[in-house]
Amino acid sequence: MKDIKIIVAAHKPYWMPSDPVYMPLHVGAAGKERIKGFCRDDDGDNISDKNAHYCELTGLYWAWKNLDADYVGLVHYRRHFANGKRTKDKKSRVITGPELDKELTAYDVLLPKPRHYWIETNYSQYAHAHHAADLDTTRQILSEKYPEYLDAFDKSMKRTAGHRFNMFLMKRDLFDAYCAWLFDVLFELEKRLDISGYTANDARVFGFVSERLLDPWIETNQITYKNMPYVFMENQNWLIKGGNFVKRKLKRSNKGQSK
View (cartoon, one colour):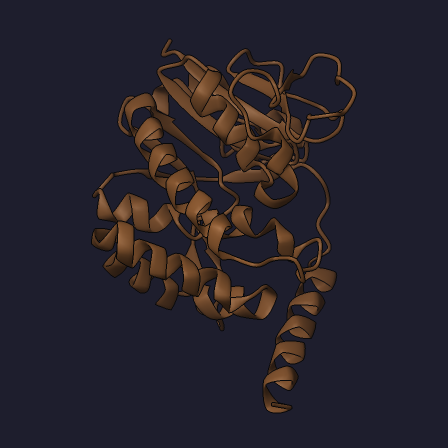
């Protein structure tokens, strides 16, 4: 079987797949007690202390700098790639190493099925949920450092769907290239953004922005990939989620009208 390692980003003890391709990783581990059976993102070359603003990307950075494997991926403790089985037992729906090995015979990259906003573009959804300046500043950085990505970035911002969650599995050379590009953009964004007035959620800005950078990178480099189903390990209340979406939209809209 191919040499596959997928880090499972987690900040607390939680059920983990027993398949050896999965590596439980405590993200934001700096200064915290060790979780039994988990690796830590503050070992070796790391940015663990940036976790409050980079979210699971501190785990991604750790994997990039410290993990040796031919295929490297990232999932979350509550969200995994799925094997397509229709069963109520969510744990049995988490894809296994041999199943991934089969998928990787035809594709170098596996991504989660895109998330659809339907009535929002990727840009407007982000602006309603967070701060438009985050994406505007990112675009400026791309225009200065990586202008070849601007066209794909602009097209992505106008769409109503995109790959989210920073979930993927990539062949090593692509993984290295993506991380080198992504963190160069994000570290520059960190220098330029003043997030001192952001809420704790909005301050997770670099994790949020990175979700909007994956598609432009994939498309600019003309990388073929497969959209994979995924399973959320807990129950999700879509009424509450939808209500929060409407509240954010109305709040931003009313704020704009009051100016």
